[in-house]
Length: 107
Image 1: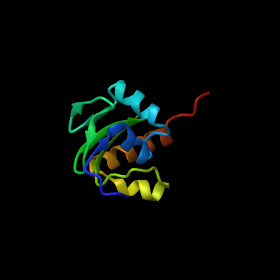
Image 2: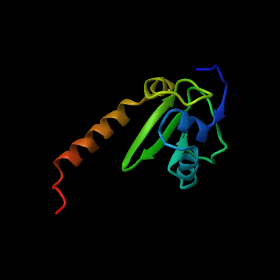
Image 3: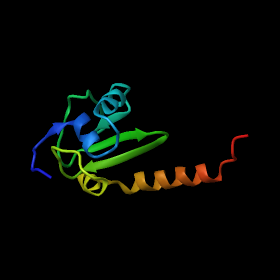
């Protein structure tokens, strides 16, 4: 991990492995599914350590705090070091997972 001061949000989302491609991250940002510190953004918006990023992966909303930046996309264990998920986000994700598990199977 490099010590960058800021980087584009679409690139950071790709490096942190929230989306498989940078263009998919850009598309989700364009649809308004990603915010920084509660504000709607464009793909070129710069993200800095300490910013709060809210996004939606599938049906589950996630809120993470940017811990550091990386110029390269690395393996998943390294990517997880780039952010810290909030306690509320973890609880919501686990609740959604439990509801999916208990849901009736489609016929």
